[in-house]
Image 1: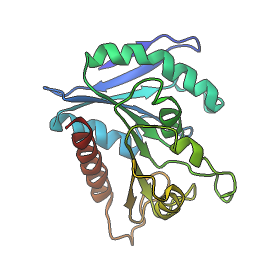
Image 2: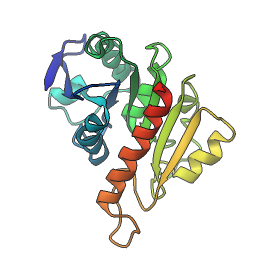
Image 3: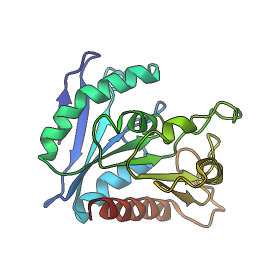
Length: 216
């Protein structure tokens, strides 16, 4: 099911994978270099509905318009915020977990408190630009006052799971799940212990367990 949502930046689009008897809605944004077909986003949309969670993947207006370069972060927040009422209406009072991959995770972190999200899901949070650990985005990751789950590859050039665990320190509201052998796109080497199917299963199980814990 797709729903076009008008914003001041042009139409965005929600692709909804509904659960038969939903207990929560998981609203996910895509990264700056890809769309909602990313392997982790697609896995969640395919598997979470069977576990009772509706998944709504959001395409930013720039992506819907066919542009190849994402706008600046503040612009991404605008469209996301303006889409929130449509998501809330679709959720019909159910808890809403916001999140996304890479740039989408940053958007979710920056807006979670204002949108009264129940929790935040970060897939491949870009802690810093590749090769520039001094340009940290840790402050964004620490913004949400609700529980945060981070699924991070140990080969991610934007910051590994170990990097995030070290930077987060004793912040108990943030849980980091390492994805062995995965890069920023959650892709693994042929020599990795995990297969692509294993990664999809790990992501899905971790998110389902996290959301279950949040909504009780």
